[in-house]
Amino acid sequence: MHADLILAGGRIRTLGRSGLRPLSHLAITGAHVAAVGGREVMALRGPRTRVVPLHGDAVLPGFNDAHAHVVYYGLTRFGADLGGAKDIDDIVARLRAHGRKLREGEWQQGMGFRSSELAERRPAHRAELDEATGTRPAFIDERGGHLRVANSAALAAASITAATPDPHGGRLGRDADGTPNGVLYEAAMRMVADVQPPPAREHRERAILLAQDLLVSRGITSVGAAVNRGFADDLFCYQRLAASGALRMRVNEFLSWELLDAASRLGVRAHFGGDMVRAGPIKVFVDGGADRVAARGGQATWRTTPAELRDLVARASSAGLQVAAHAIGDGAIEAMCDAVESAGALHLRHRVEHCSVCPPDLRRRLARLGMVAVMQPLAARFARESRDLFPATDRNDIAAHRPLLDAGVPVAFSSDLPVTPDPSPWAGVRAAIEDNVNGITPVQALRAYTAAGAYASFDERVKGTLEPGMLADLQVYDGDPLERDRDEWEALRPRAVLLGGAPVFGSV
Image 1 (cartoon, rainbow, N blue to C red):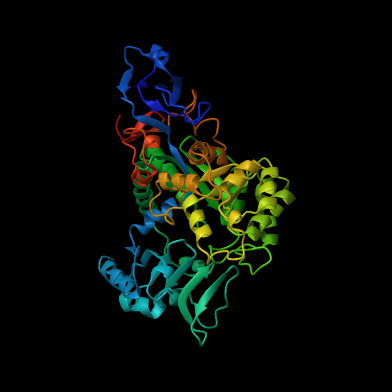
Image 2: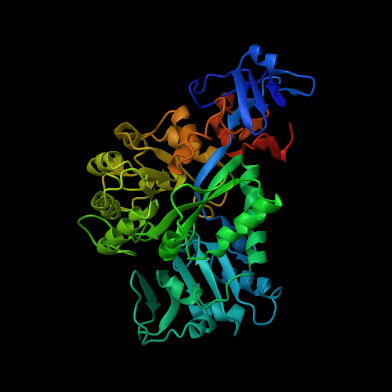
């Protein structure tokens, strides 16, 4: 059988058996790698084979971003961009300018600010948002996804008053007299979001395409599409885009815990779906953001209590469904281990998303229970370097990439887009390599962004490396990134990205 395409004379790193040892030639037939090696690969050249000389340029497997909020990121592109806001007046000015573009009655959103970066060192008050938004319902999200501020109209739409109790797993910010000040923590964010008119499917599809443009341009060919809410429409939109040929990346779509019973009744199981779109794990929040975690031996924020988690994991496991648990603190990770152990579901590769504080006993348990740690190296490094986060925790247990790997736990890397505004994996690869506490090797870091992500979604036999028989999902770089100074890595962009052997970004 002749190859359709041969990439010749390059530095091809399969991340498979040959690791980072460069090979020179790669042949593609159909959607798969037919052969990889030296000049002997040219034996597959036929009369219609296209041969592309690489002149020493590098080829790597496509990246797999195992946890990114694709739809949410795309939808925020239609809202006010609050990234880098210096103070609350800056937020108000940006909201006012953005609001002029909206239709009457349309809800307004903004995203990207950090309370810690504002001059006031606090989130805005609802009355301050009212200055820009008036009677239009509006809310803004802090980058990180664990705090939202609603204006007075949005609170009214949700019937939130001084008499409204804090919801399970969340809290309402209040003035001294008990009046809600608009700040919504954790599960309280849902109180407003649930009364906001949901975006139409067409709007969601445009959001996916916006996010896709960014992800693919960074060499990402597969993504674990994380969710915050229980919309089944997202899966529908991904499938419709795939059927139309507009989807240019492979999607493992998380299902919010609210969809567990429906998915179970429909017979959805782990690895359910096709080459382009999969119904992925059931997503559940165990604890909150980095400053509202469930820690052992301390005050804990539980979005889902250990008893509730045990029940959910048992029901999901009995239905053959993987669970992806947002768990930052060691208390939350321990609760997830307890739930998986109680369910006896060692074959489902249950996932701990973030896994930020993981001491030795929990690393051993994760390995024994066949679980996967899905981590964000940039966020993890920040957590260790910030003494305000986890102050009583052994710093060696934060961002424990190497100890987890040494214990036998698969570690997959991700961006958590838009928490990390630019999802380029190279910055994370560098952070993981240069970590002076738990640093890992270049091949381990690159595999965490490729093969390990495939393993986390049960796809390790079809993608994640460039071995013969694997999907030809790959990226081509001018020159060789691994021979450049690491200071240049953050700005690296592939010149071409292929999905199943077909260009989806740039050209070869």
